[in-house]
Amino acid sequence: MRDRFGQLGILLGLACLLVAARAGATQSFDLVLRGGRVIDPETQLDAVRNVGIRDGVVQAVTAESLEGRETLDVRGLVVAPGFIDTHSHAQTPSGQTYQVRDGVTTALELEAGVHPFPGTQQQLEGVALIHYGASANYLFAREQVKGSTEAAVGERATSEEVTRALAKLEADLDRGALGIGLLLDYMSEAVDASELRKIFELGARRRQLIFIHMRRPARAGDPAGLSEVLELARATGAAIQICHIGSNAIGGIATFLEMIRSARAKGVDVSAETYPYTAGSTYIGAAVFGRDWQTAYGTTWADVEWPPTGERFSETTWKEYRAKFRDDRNALIIHHFNREEWLEQSLRDPLVMIASDAVPTRSLEERAHPRSMGTFARVLGVYVRERGVLTLSEAIRKMTLMPAQRLERLTPEMARKGRIQPGSDADITIFDPNTVNDRATFKEPNQFSAGIAHVLVGGSFVVRDGANVAGVHPGKPVLSGSTVD
Ligand SMILES: [Zn+2]
Image 1: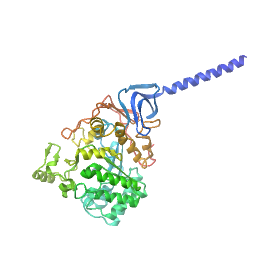
Image 2: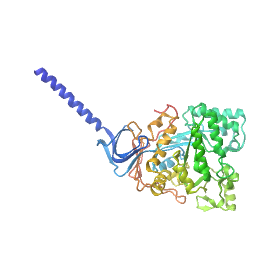
Image 3: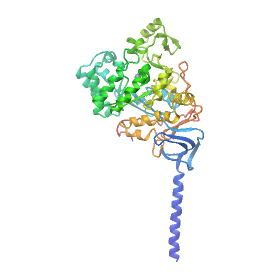
Image 4: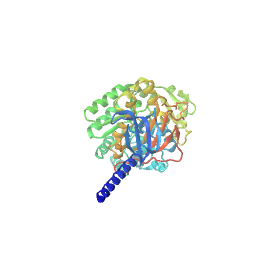
């Protein structure tokens, strides 16, 4: 009997230990987000839940109460996957500071990219607030082969030169570049049909995604530039993403979206993104202004704004400024060429994701297009809450799951982003749906978005109680293939 009691005692003791271990497991979260409205676009969860985070990973999403070393009460706030921006030129500390205050946790330079990779990306190593990454920039590879920017954007390449430029791109892809950045419009007169086809063939062979700023046609709304890339994608099997479709389509947006839809129905692998502003921005010396841009955009000098003073151009001042700042890539103008109704059509379309086209800045004081600071909050504030163009969950899908799924072919890491589920990276944006909005304007762009309460990157607070957290740099490079741990 004694022995049996002894055994019972041991068994009871073991059971107690197991219970204690289980209780310990539920209490071992680093952080618990308590009582927020969790929206996960993949599982279509939209309910009040507690989120348990450990080691930078979401471990639990549950209605049951959770215990953690730290608990943050987020009642009344939306808990969403961190926003993923596939089109951000703002790969600088100040650019990231603005973007994280806009809810962005991953900002990638894919439309242009860098060359040779990782190039300027290195300046973010160890100081990044949010995750970053870049494609391989074909224009820069071409520039190295041709010997100058002028030749790269203005001269045809021999087939031997094209081969060399493409080999440079391949080396970038091997080093971790995410797809191919194709600024076709900037090389519109230089790149012929055969060169373009070879870029697409490379994209198809390497199973990459080509991010395209397509050729701008002579007349506003003409879809010739879109036809060209859709046809090449169909012929070669390359997957493509149309950058800032709203600013390329302008008044032709209905036709452009219809063409994309019908190409997809025929098996063409094409996606698109847009930013939520009716004006665009590029440098005053850009090649586009050497052509008949007034016909191309359906605008005139008075539709173009000079950000330092807010003045609108006349023919005289335009000529003067363009000559003076011709080679200054930071001499940006704001071109008011779009209309609300056209923009809303692209935002509403289920095929179009949100991306900022954020402009790089070297300091928090440097002026830039307000999309660099306020794109994501603007969609949530203006187009979801004020105008009802999108539902909240659909807007979040366009900022999180859609870009993550699109990029999964480039890196498996994206399967852990854009979601809030057990196993997802703890990149999380927590905002107040009643106050979230952009504050950056064309006149006063240097303003953080409102209503973004907390932002976690890899489980670390980068924004807390609506303010930047000092001294944290959890941003990591997002690299192609399996090179990321
Ligand atoms: Zn562009």
